[in-house]
Length: 200
Ligand SMILES: [Zn+2]
Image (tube, rainbow, N blue to C red):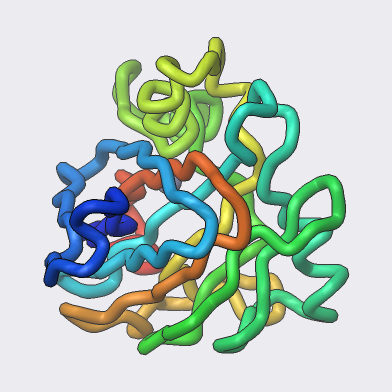
């Protein structure tokens, strides 16, 4: 998974050619990054069929204002944002606009996998999870527990009609690109769930 981050240009280098920053997220781990209003970022599936749990918070709101799947579902009248449509905050404002999408199959209905989820499945005690991955990388922004992680936008997860289906949706190099409509802090997790084909 690659994140060509927002180009954070100063006034001095704004006119210079600059390639996007890229961060490769380690398998089964998370990554947090800040994006300024008006900047773009892209989440790329390097190898195909990798679900990415994504969450975001409005900067400087102490993690109170955040990306909301229920508001997004309401505004989209469904669970699939099209290019040009937005994901919304829990204060009913458009937060991120989808500006490009080579997959168009994502999920905004399921929770992040979490310690209890794996515990009930009999997984090893310290199995990594998206909720703890996101909490781990959001610690520097004030997050104290994985229970504070908001419902995610599950990028590349195939859940049409609210039922998980085999992925087959994202191929190596596929991506979704957003424009930030406000300053925000984003977090993403390479989902470590591998026991079913939905999350290769
Ligand atoms: Zn997960």
